[in-house]
Length: 245
Ligand code: PEP
Image (tube, rainbow, N blue to C red; front, side):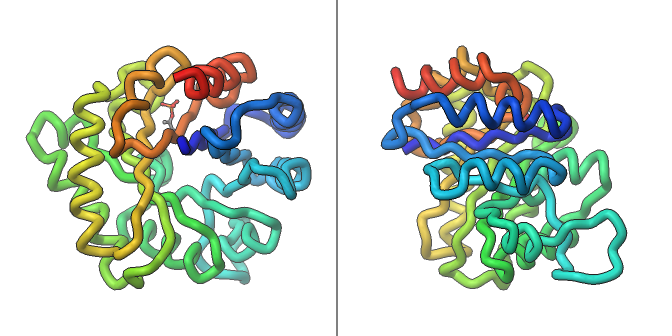
């Protein structure tokens, strides 16, 4: 089973989100092979969730606030998303870390809030180009894992997404052999924190052409996909490529 998680970011307005969600709802793909998750904007969330309720398609939040309720103008909490039908939530996405200045401490609070609310957090981790050039990739990934997972129950259910910052939205995907090796080391590191098998997704410029190179690797459980997931033709080609592989 390959997880294909579509992060629509802020690419689609409400009408565009509903057009794409409706188009996807009419497509058939092999649900034995693919587990599809859609992460629409907060604005489109409830309508997309309604459309996919009681189907194989999961719907998730792109971002959550950690306090369940209160005077937090503009925020939507993990608990509110859970109440509205979300299964998953992204936490620590590189755009949240680097554009909105979220720290590892913020990511931990969001991760813990998701578990508390009954959402499955997808913990996004990844090194920057500077980390890579300074030989600090392993250090960065371990630190991002440790700062969130220390103290978390060993049987907690969550995902990790390895998303090198330099590969997101750049067209410069991480080589599949390298990605597989990093996934192996992430999984080894995860053994310190959990007794559960934790799916590890790869993200960063995945498209319908390069996805097939990652598929044979056991340590790659699926993909978090940005721009290629916000376009019907690209996403359908990608699903078809995964089914055909
Ligand atoms: C992402 O936003 O998680 C992502 C991987 O984006 P893209 O596929 O556009 O690189």
